Image (tube, rainbow, N blue to C red; front, side, top):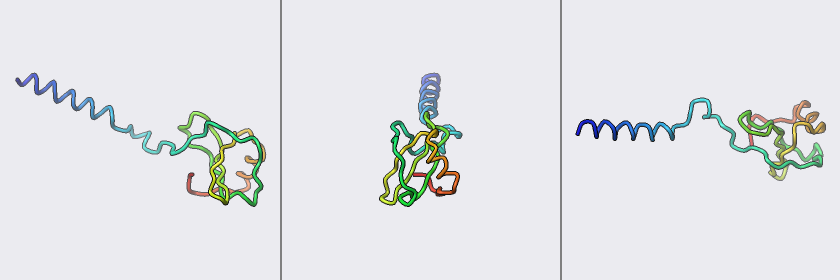
Length: 94
């Protein structure tokens, strides 16, 4: 009986442990980009620009417009790199 209880306890512990979030993933990305827009957005329509979280499979810029839309652009887009470097960025991630 003790062996059965011990085995059941270990099984439950293993199941709960497998659902636990590893410490390094607690700050995982809320949104990653998988589709990218190819056109540019006028600077006056941009509220913020952020890089996606390092945990995302495809690194990208996320542009938030004055209408609240979030648009993904590849890191290689020069206009968005320039806008990002000019300081059009916010402390909050989309």
